[in-house]
Image (cartoon, each protein chain N blue to C red):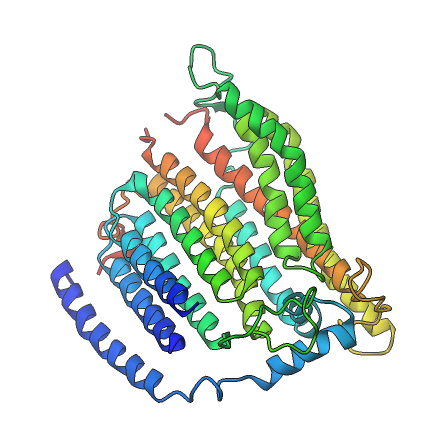
Length: 253
Length: 115
Length: 79
């Protein structure tokens, strides 16, 4: 169907949908009745039962840890999908870098200001990412956020230098193995609960004292595993996208 | 009440994102409109979990009894955001492969997406 | 506080509309980056700091980068 017909059908549908939404939201119970009993219990139990102060991380990595495994594996499979889509169809094609600062005659070297600032920022970024991962149970943060922050450190390095250096530092096989290790570590940490004759992923390690890094039992360990996996996954995504944009196989244009 | 305003914004984002998907002329723009549709769900979940006058669910500096916002909704949203990024990466990879084989980025001209 | 929340909600709606109506390919990554920033501020105002941190890193750094790289790849003419 052509564009005008599609637009008319959409406008009819959207008007109906908007009307239904407005009716539904007007009939919702008020904010006092939207109160979730589970949420109040989760908030009330964080400090006494698990000795952690971040209720969101406790819900993510302890009360609903099984759902987090599912989400982490959606991430894992999506990264795998991107790698499969960008796989090399010929055996070992020679790749030449299309436009880069190392190509002679090209005026694309990063300016000195960029180079100085990004080289200075690599170490604080790595430190900050590790800090956010480790303190997942205490302050806002956790595996997912800290992992993505860690993944921007090789990216900053790429901005300071060129793609060849990025390839050497974030070597493909090492990052792949790290991602698989992170995903497997999460699954295997859950098995500890089975060995203690409780359910899978029960938090059986000693809880420690509140506001210390060792509080929360398995929560910091799971946070580290998730952080590794997310960081490695994003570095792989960046690697593949950069390779696709910046290099050209022999035989293409 | 602020929660109803947030619901209205969520519905608006959903509908405007769908409009963008339907009238899009470039596949990457279609991807961005899907991102807008997905952010409508974030606004909705934030509105459902919000309690007026409550603190964030971090008890590092407040005593554990203070009324706090719903942490379960935030747990749902935070993994969802990271997963969204990888799914968008997958969509962009598919778009790049379409361009390699089909030479068109207009959704009306890609064979599988006609109509 | 209510005024701040209303203001940020209106800003989110306006920025979302702007992202949808930006057909120019070069402005799309910057638009998504700004949208991610505005969403992150909204999460922060609605007392959700974990989500704000996550959205900030992903939506303002990760997504625009991948979109820009995909656009750069698409612009290269094939043989």
